[in-house]
Image (cartoon, rainbow, N blue to C red; front, side, top):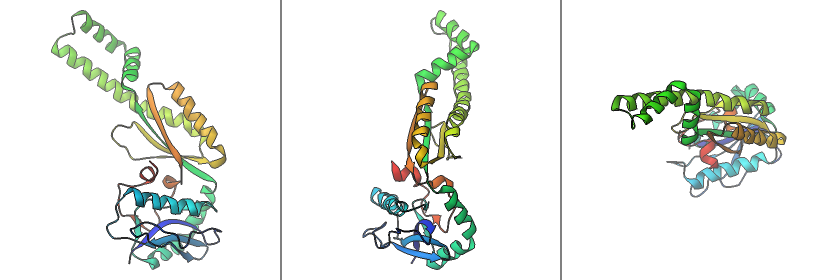
Length: 256
């Protein structure tokens, strides 16, 4: 029977959620595997597990219950190990790494920030910043819209300028928020987002981080910034004793 891994914590953790229900239908019973100073929160792994809402919420619920009493290194949804012995073996082999991560992440949460351009606003900004685009657009307007080649050239210039702004704006968002965070982790690129970054934030400083996001929104009105959190610090835990069975689920999928 494969073993589903929810998270890793200290063996002395005061409130491990043993006996509660986890993923699966019916829910698989949560149990605790200990190896030295570490423990893994696990259950049997259901066959054919997919990121359905019920199981995503069950995964989050187990982590929330465990995290209420102390730091837990969260595994992403779908993390499955061949068996219990593999889990305890990796806990033993990487004990120093996991203990260091528990110390570093204690009292911290993750906020994921995604950003995209507000189309009309970024076009206005590109026009204001680029004399060549402005001049060509004005020439086309005076000539009743311009010929095919003029329109094509204008479109190419605008597209190139917007693309250049994407990288600049992504860097500017991270630069604006980084001082309010303990660490930053770049997320995978995805269609529609020019920035996808996760920020490790002290739980007690969360209001300061969210205030920094609001300030960035005011300073960058041509961007649509969306914040998801607080989350368990998924993006700041290196691969654990299991590989995700599904790459379609993760921190964002579990919280949205």
